Image (tube, rainbow, N blue to C red; front, side, top):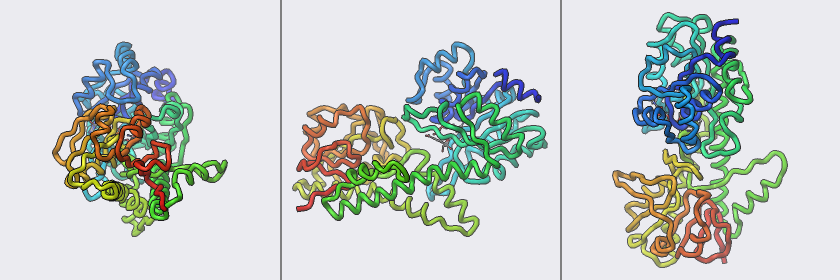
Length: 439
Ligand SMILES: NC(=O)c1ccc[n+]([C@@H]2O[C@H](COP(=O)([O-])OP(=O)(O)OC[C@H]3O[C@@H](n4cnc5c(N)ncnc54)[C@H](O)[C@@H]3O)[C@@H](O)[C@H]2O)c1
């Protein structure tokens, strides 16, 4: 039995998590909870300080959990990459954004890889967890690590294990969600599985990092394509009139097999569903392959904020409110329900598009105290009857469960609801996306 196997089994392996954001912090906490001495490494000093003070900046991670693990000496954080040298296992959870022209930006993986290489020692296991295009592990990260002269599968071990965390999801957690793992060699897969078996309920070994990379993209593209389909259906129902897309979806969802409901909305956002499809479309072009499904889904979903803005302006017009004089109250700025993440939020896109068309925009979001749009700062307002009454139109863009939708329905003068947060129908002042009363 190798030394690393023993260290894993005895929970003596020291573990680093590089990048302690939405993915890395919950992971570091779970690894520490499983008994491994864990260090989070991040370039952001605020996050490092927060962890060391026993605080949490991620909604799903209770501060008490961080505090308890830090107190017990099982979890700490640092900006110093030299800590990698003290560790046997290194997880990389850095961002994988896209550029302004929507090409993949793997520079964070490259940077983390260089730092890991500078501290690489024989026997270490490196696991990349950031979502990325197929072959990143073998063609981007591996060459950086092998430049040290150490050889994968012999001197060190490298795998790709995509993170599947769903922030805000109370049912499926890091522990209960299976982890797919593809190592560069069989030994790499075996060691990675051996470690992750201690952290999560189920591991799913696959034959290569490429399969694991592609499987993660398939999962997210599956969502993007299906959301695009229902967004198209919502616009169709809106055009046809008298067919309620939400009723249609709920009816279809009663089929016990072969169907899974997805819901329309003002667009998609966050760090995954919007970005990841572009990673694969970009990679496919290298092989003269154009992924029509991916591009069409992206086009459909990205048209939604524009559609919603047109609808708001139309609703104002129908009700005799000149858009130029209108005061708009936005409900929800986060990209989805019950989270504080505003990255690529369609709500922010809608607000940006409305900025020069209406007189005043305000927003309510208990999770998001402040946002910046086109260089202007906005502070979240408290949901009150007076605030609702003062708005010419209230637009629901994110349906946080903690908000009082009865109050919104009662006090608002006009409502555009893009999430079907208000279940009522045939209320004159209410305009639900995908349901238009004709005649
Ligand atoms: N957020 C999600 O729900 C989710 C789910 C599954 C997968 N992912 C994937 O996980 C990866 C990370 O996403 P995230 O949402 O946690 O991002 P994030 O921005 O919340 O966290 C990334 C962290 O990495 C740090 N960082 C950046 N460069 C660094 C470097 N060179 N060295 C050390 N730290 C560095 C940042 O300061 C930040 O704290 C991405 O590839 C994303 O696609 C995210």
